[in-house]
Image 1: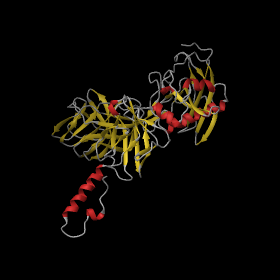
Image 2: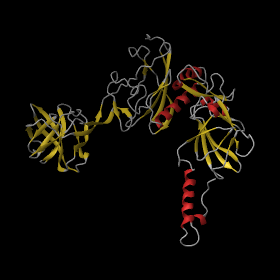
Image 3: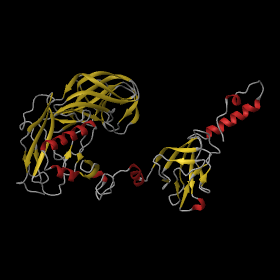
Image 4: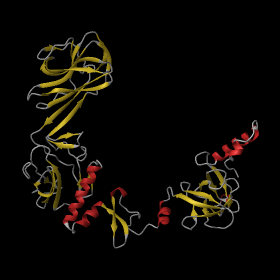
Length: 480
């Protein structure tokens, strides 16, 4: 048995006595190697029901490679009081059974008082030496789910939470059956169908909970079989081709008629030497007419002091500087310059952003813009003499007069006769008039025919936020 050396063995009394010091050091080393994680796993083979461990991690094989064998005792020759061992099987085709309370020195006491079969190498049993016995500290079932359910006494009846089902597990939800006192599982579609005859308030509360969970977890559009919940955290679930006037604010995770939109030139760049200061117009994306440019960003790895600017395209390679602001760039990649006076893009014409920077070697998009060899100032015009540009980006606040947001199609098991809509809406600016400014419609023929809902307030959450509901009769629509 190897134990931690006593103090006098490791630090002996009397000067010059090096022998015990060396022995103590070696003993300390051996003891540490018995600890979890300090040594590789070693295989042990059962002999007459027993094995003799030497370290924390072992695999157990059956005697004579038999299909099954009993492990009744773990001999304690090498491991001290309080030592831990972790054992598992070598092969699923050779199953050791760890016997509970078999008697004798090195017997094993299991937590549930029953034998433990090491059915698969992924299963583990952790034991602690307590006097002449080994006591269970923990166990892991690995891939053996059925064995774990049996150990935990979890209901495995048909349609229970743990039973196998024809439906994909991703389509299943857990519900509590109070009559049976057990958790059971059912498909989302069946759950919604079972709610149809119950109190409508309970159904509405379930939808509100789904809204809150989806919003708090930042979930994309969540399909519930015959229904869908969308908190509009991203653009998933929206038919962009069928929608009109919609503006998505990615930073806020909201749709509306006003949104901050970021446009960034991420085209390939190459380093080029320019011997004189230049105006650079980035032609990757024109600004939106009537939008307000809030900031302009410039990409460079060479520091400079110059300007960022907005340019009007006059045609034939001619440009006019409409607005500019001083910009001192640190040369660390993208750097944003918020305009002290945001620029409102006129209702007509084509406008771009860019910058002026002094002579240097810096990154440009070749053939991606327009350049002129000197600064010209606000109101002045120039005709390009090169087609390169410094990469830029800008943030503009865009607006649209109205927004029509169309969801992606939801496939129903049969043609629905009605639809119930729940809408969580917040007035960010102004006050929306119900069923005039906020209109909800539903279609059962893939968006060809729509029936408008008559929304009513289900819940007033205050601060302009309300939850609306409506039942829509679809029985008169074509289906398809």
